[in-house]
Image (cartoon, rainbow, N blue to C red):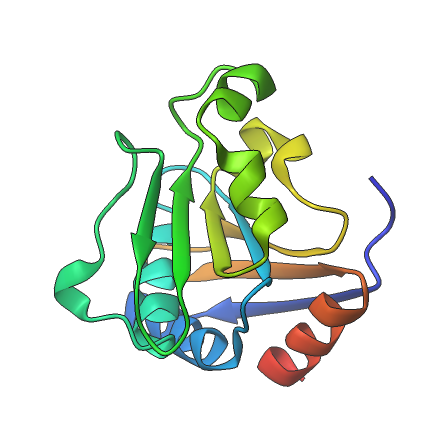
Length: 159
């Protein structure tokens, strides 16, 4: 993997702020955007994803964990896929799900949790967001853009 074209770091003081950050990102997403999420259990990925989905115009009642389905489609302002790679063993298992074709279609934005388990699932250009515990409720976020569109997205999102 190449070096990121842009990196931003911040601390979110609460789950609510992590959610608000997600809403802001979701309002900026366009079809073809790929956002990979990395972080331990309880690091805030779900709060961020629910916010992104809300910002993309997805009804709150529609947002579910795709842990068992692997990929869950949402309809909103833009179409959105939400994928969870936690239960997959390797790239071949992911490939068998049809995930690679979904990425290639570029007709939806994609949110992919546990991207660190199968990093080769990411396209050449993508935004990676790493979340870490930074206190009881605080989370540190590191966002890394790889490519022109992800750099523009990250600049619009976090400045």
